[in-house]
Length: 131
Image (cartoon, rainbow, N blue to C red; front, top):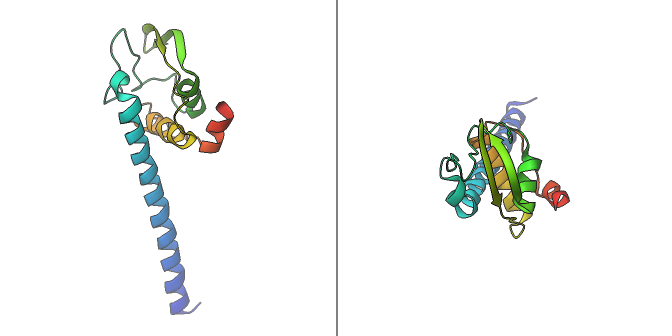
């Protein structure tokens, strides 16, 4: 391989990495924005929830690496007893099916990664199957 071809290959590889990093950052930013707009009032800025009222998302092992479950709760809502980190909650989260599949996928990934310590994501196409 000539030096010119090596340079071109390196340039292409760098561009691919930069695009992947940018799209990942953009998705994380989108998830944060969706969270702030739709979730933060109840679950609070750091995902800590409100004792006895709204369960925490931060450190919640019930949702870690379960983005499909997170998406389903967003779409369909949730009511009844749940236990999070030893504390019992018995409230109702309204369905938020009005949100787009892309927004639900972004916020599910954001919550899973930033609050629950997970790494799995869900695509907008997969969210569609949850509806």
